[in-house]
Length: 236
Ligand SMILES: [Zn+2]
Image (tube, rainbow, N blue to C red; front, side):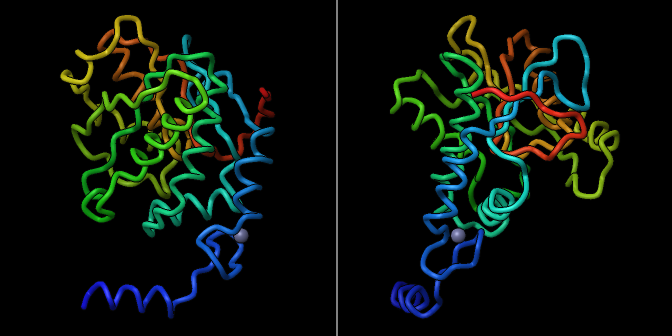
């Protein structure tokens, strides 16, 4: 009966594109193409984390600016559980990762907040990272997800916080999962991945935590990033 109810709901509630509102599917072909084709040429590379200019900061690559269709697709996936959007987000993340070098890529996702898993029932970034590394392997790269980080404490949600407040809130919130690290190939360069990079506070805390355990981080890749005042360089 429950299955029947779900089927009827699918038939009677029209699906609309989360980016432009066109009726038909959760993401129409035009919006999908704009995200994975057009933005392929707009990969931005920040030479250092914008808010952390420390020596040795790593490059940050994002596949798109966090606005328009990219922003609506990320929010629909993360906050409203539209999991049909995982493939397009995975493709975007794969493009960012590939811009960081030749690999092999040991991809470390930012660990989810515990309440987020409870609320959504799924680690949405983990799903995007799985999809991205699968696409990279299919294209001939060596890429695997290495869930090396876990949450030690919850720094709370960042919305409405300044860069400084975010930085302070995330300090000490992540820890290394020693079982995962023990399986890492010696000398493997890690890539930290997130869905959206804003101030860089969260990804920097991940880099700091990994480095504190003697691990080398090659760079940071994300699906999207907020616009920076400084003009970003471009890579193809
Ligand atoms: Zn659309």
